[in-house]
Length: 176
Image (cartoon, rainbow, N blue to C red; front, side, top):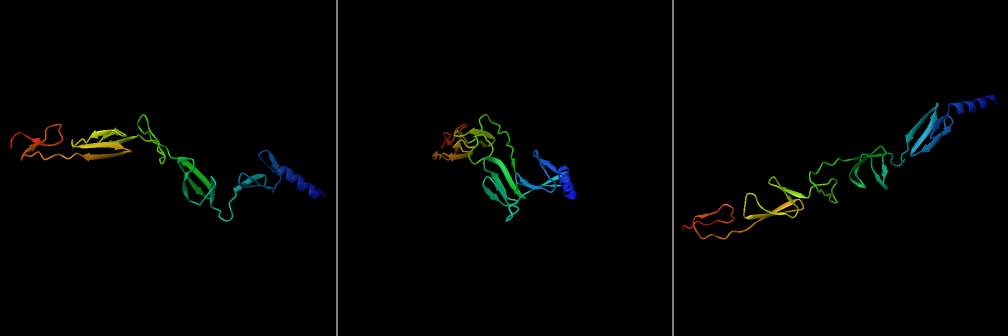
């Protein structure tokens, strides 16, 4: 009887405390996906895994394989990775778009300026402009793309046509 009392007494004094609960020596419990035990007065915990696939991760109701990267379901800038049963996510930082009214398109992570850059110049979405090097071409900025169309010039009907400054099509200089 004395031996049994000594063991119980030692278990109570040598136990562990976890989240305000006192556990006796060699007790085992689960908490927040971990298996914990009290050994030599020290608490030891390890993550639990699905025995069928110890390296798979469950995240937002979906299963991912070990090493698999995926987009965060609620944040287009978030990239997540399953590693040894745990998911870690990081948010990609967005650069400053450099305009006053940036937009974020549904398939993009970061906001961008709704402009086109063409030949070193910025043009607003929907803006039309003359091609910088060809006065016969009119261009338009649409959805980050510049499209140019060249206006055809009629035949001036002379052997030495000239193009006046600021004009698109050549004209006859007065001599035939």
